[in-house]
Image 1 (cartoon, rainbow, N blue to C red):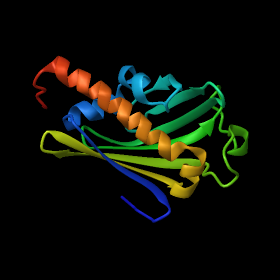
Image 2 (image 1 turned 180 degrees about the horizontal axis):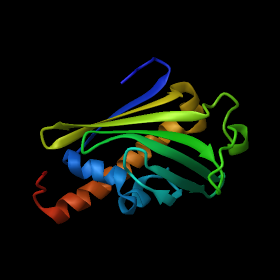
Image 3 (image 1 turned 45 degrees about the vertical axis):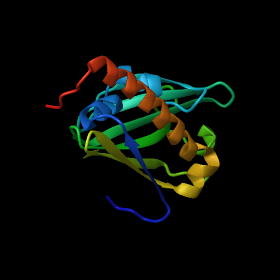
Image 4 (image 1 turned 60 degrees about the vertical axis):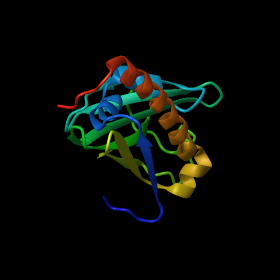
Length: 170
């Protein structure tokens, strides 16, 4: 994973096995419950998690409106790694400029997001790397949003782990 000091890099430890955490990142039924900042909802117009597969989603924010994103999956290694692009778009899936999407002028046209899932005993360390300046991500609220989403995901994983009893990885 290329790491330059300007890029956004977040590490979070989840109390759940890697396969369960990975599934939460790839199953639209799971994603719709956690993959949006506090006070927002997410809708997936399409999602096909496989190498070369694409997605088109929208985060609905009650004050700031809709933020449409499209992208492509470049790597899908179950349950270890996801690499995907994130491109600002409109409802029709057409690429839009950063200012048209309400982002700063220097916001990247395409962000590459790499997520790794590393077992640490019965827990999973998730490392999120995005090719966007951390300073810009902090200004737009994207940085802070990851923490609220990770907290929500942990709550969901806690419920799933309790429902599953002992989760056996394959």
